[in-house]
Length: 550
Image (tube, rainbow, N blue to C red; front, side, top):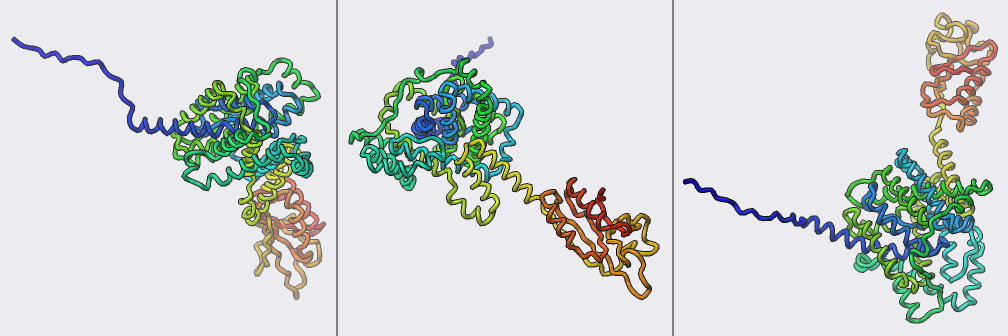
């Protein structure tokens, strides 16, 4: 009799996570805490500097973590409110009111979504580096000029020129007031710690400088009970105000429409450019997946759309938080999502904890951040090696300080295009003395209508003995070969015509344009006119391809 052995069935157990997975999860968890600690003072500081409630900065940081962090695009860069848009947000709030800010951000977010859907993200990489550096430098200067007032618990006059003009009066008023001096000491101490803390590398790896500086300033102010202003914080639900129909109607007013469109366009372009430039910088810091620029642009647009619906600040990807995320050892996008979770828990459960933070300390963080945007070390070598780029950088920065963000960047872009057009339109003449008769010169080789057998045109002045057989006792002087090389555009036309008109009038000229890589219509018409004048009524004309149509 045959026997059958029946195996005992055991319930299947879920596979345990691998060691590599655990290491990755631990790295992302630790990095999320570091980014959270860096983000808290920056979110609050940017909101206060923008003239809006501090909670709105936290709302933007939460959306940047929970929503934008989940979307595809860049894996490790972190989004939230940025110092680069502080000046523009402040001006928009002063001009249109806090309620209209959400409508402006919403429109900017929708515009970013459209640009991403049209696959325009990659084109942001074509913006001149000098314009970007000038934009950041201008932002830094305006940010510093405005935050110096907050550093002393004073109110800033307004725009960049007014803030700069009011600095002497601010110094006098601060020296005459003990509370202002106390606030200035707190802010200056914060800046000093931000500069010195990274030099202690072992400690800087554990605790980021902004957290240490703000925490120490808060402790000192609390312990000594200094008479300085603190951040005023309420619950998140109290400040979230979706834009209503009245806000959109105010922005659609014909008198304000031009300024509104400019503000929306500036929000969208600057936020997109800063995010994608940050993505390019973050990609150089790690070996993980590279950024898909179009998807990242749509992720930023989705985040700004939601921020607009909540009435919060606009968001960008921020290099400060992103680099902290990379250096903290983040492996996946889980770190930036978790940082949004910590912001939400902190803002919802412990909002009163922010009420003890001195405004002067946050102003110190932003002054230090603004100083890092100014390319002080990069300026001397740039001036020595690429003076045109340095001029574009400086002009962009000065224009932003003197006017506003949008007009300054537009001026910088126009200068960069003009500089590139000027540099690429190099053209020069190579003049060669003929040592032997050219093919077709004189006699049987000459064609009809002033052209030789090769179809080239020569130029003379109709003078006796030029282009025609002379007396038997005299040999005709050989023509000069003038070869144009480079890119002949209208920008170089005056110089080119000056060189042609300086050629000797008693010599026959053979003009060779085959060395030109580009010949625009203005140059073609001008060279044709010059050839006609040089030919005269009877003189021949030589010309080598490409042909000129006078």
